[in-house]
Image 1 (cartoon, helix red, strand yellow):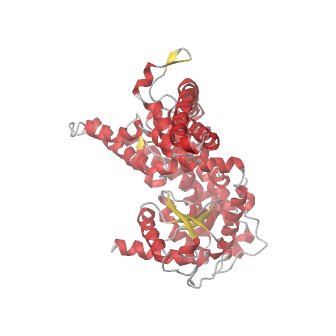
Image 2: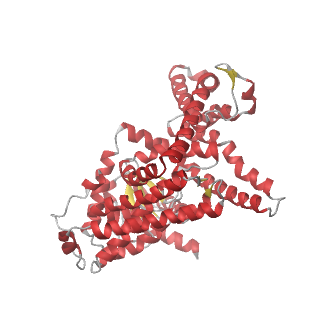
Image 3: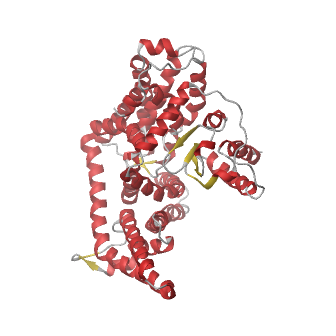
Length: 496
């Protein structure tokens, strides 16, 4: 029955994105089905949003992304791929008519904002950050699984239960992290146009135990020195060396010369340069993050929690993915993620306030009811693009809620209760199983829950009292009434 449901969802989505012939590639991340399209004009955005299983749609410079939520997307994607493959030989038309749906003005504003954001994100820096994110996103499921197992192992270790199982769980949880540099190197070469296995081979040097016998800069190197940052740099270098070889090496000896030169040249530079430099950078990142929350505490949490939603809108949050991974590699968890997760709590609180302040706007309240469960689990796109950002002021008050929750978590960290997440990807309530820290699971859970509660309450109060002008309340608080053209531009608070 579950398979039938997932296949029905895939079958409902396919004609609304232009049919099999309109799709050039398919992938998925934690929450989104990501498809590359031949013709964007064939997509029926309004009909897609109307599907019960669809939580929202997001678009960037490369892919059209349909938010289905954690778990669901991993089950729907194979069904969607199968339908696409079946449809292409049969010569399906590029588009079949979807159900007639009249788009709300609010949804139109959200679409316009996403289009504008897509244009703003098409800068060289943001495109590079997106490619870096593409290196790490495929690793998230393994990080989550191993992170939860590590947390379970910690509970068993602290309680003394099942002592014979603890070493086995430790091996299962740590095996992936011990070789994460290899996976980063493989994905980096794949993303930047090189041969993936060569990127993985060069990155494997970093975690090879025998590297401890090598001297560089007057000291012995240590296995893992430089971590994921070193692997990223080494694989990028390998891609450039490989491309240079492909250009100059004769085809008759390419199969022998190019791989050899790529691994040798990139490997030597990695050993006698990149590992040391990346190691220094990784150490500095870890030291700075620890110092920031231990010394800056509440203020640091306020700034991080308050600015994370705008960072997401600008595409700059992708720069944090390697930092999170580096912290997990160094300390076993990233202390930044629970603070940043408070932005989602502020968003949920703001949505609840909008729901209460607009009792007669049935359309918007229906959107909020359908998006809130995903919001509590850390999937914020439906609430951001469907509610707060198009309205304008509630986006700012959601950031206020995130700042308050971040300040709470940061203050507790400053007072000595330091904890973090053993994986990246989940947020909201989904982050509870991944929390870890020296203060014990009970206290970690309590502090994180307290931060979420603060974010909910402050986001709600700020939006309830300051999220609407009198004119906005008059115009919005009506059945199915569209937002008039005189409403404040929704793009202004997004840049605040």
